[in-house]
Length: 582
Image 1 (cartoon, rainbow, N blue to C red):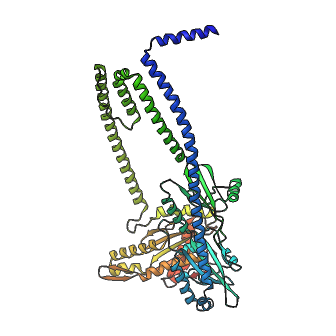
Image 2: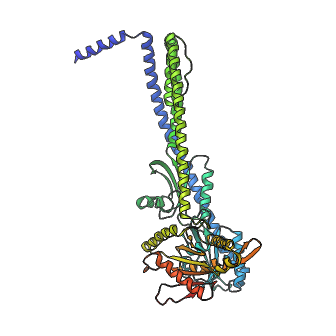
Image 3: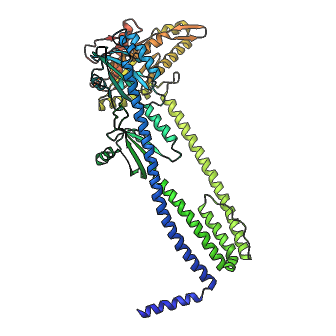
């Protein structure tokens, strides 16, 4: 063992003999500086991380609590508004009076509080006596939870979709589905007798706007807010309608009410604060969970910044020591060190840059010139590569655009812009398969212009073309974006209505017919009135394919033509073919 130690000492002494004192001092100072600076940086990073994380947790908790409070106060205010309206003395004569006057009062309330998408009054049997816009008026809501609970006391239902009401409201520009929060209060007369239930559907879009406003005013901290139901389902935020928390995690959140946690979202470490809404004043709350999340790297970035500052101070101290110890050696090695630093920067920067000219010796000047010449050649080659990539990208984009135009021409009727028969049948076959698999409803309309041959014979084929275009325009404007319309040839059109029941389909078909009846076709100075006959058929499980539905709708169209035209005829799937004309 002693022999090995002695051998190591001998080798160390031999190595020292090849180094100057100046170099040894520089090496010792550099090693000491690295140890000290590294220790300080590590300690500062740990302290900074803990302090910053604590501050961010406090800030996120405040954001979540504030947003949750705004939600509860908003709901409490809406509940109080509906309750006060139900108790207004001037409203007492209207609850059992003229439905038109009651509807006018409800619409006035809706205009005052525009967050309500629908407000209606139902009697004790569940029949809607009056409602804003006349929506659901005369319908029964006896089976709706809000009505049942509203008969007993003030009731608030959690977020849900109302497909029937949503189908009667104006389609949103972004095609997002309507979601509502129900508020219901019992209505009594002066003697305390129960008269019915006053219900309101709050458009849940206000909650999305509240979250967007909170995120926009988070001080550029990249905070991401979400609202979850008490069951852990995301109501507002990324991955909406999915379950974010469940089991013990959800139970812990609901029990704690407020707090923070660390979680992984899309492979990113996130720091999340949560607050469970417990209501406000008379509003008991729905236990909505508001979360405020921020990437954990935000806290780490602050710690790294502090460590870099300390490292820079230590580096300056080390440089002062080195400059005093090795002033002469630095003078000689300075140009080479500068070139090395520039080369290292170029290797790390985006794209090649130019070296600064260096001097100090003939070798340094020659090396500087050679490197600058090399960088110029690299820059030229990179520029040519960039130009070639740009041309390739432009060609690919042009090809994609041309393919899109060709596909559109192949699937579109040239005159009306509607789908043609081939593209429509492909979409319709998929729709039938979907309806059969998921037990959904679907309807088909066959629309034919009445006396079209007379229009051609009297005013010419150009006028007939104008009539076809006008009908196509009205049909396109009358259906939803999820529905599909096509021109099957001549003056005949077919419409596919998805997710629709019989009653709504009949109403929609007759609305299209009356819209066309009230429209006119202008051909030069001539005004040509037009009407259409409509055949309607609903999808039946016994239908083999979409052709069976279309054929049944065509039979309905034939009956509509034979029984006077300008009418809608529903052809049922039964063998009796009992007709219902709208």
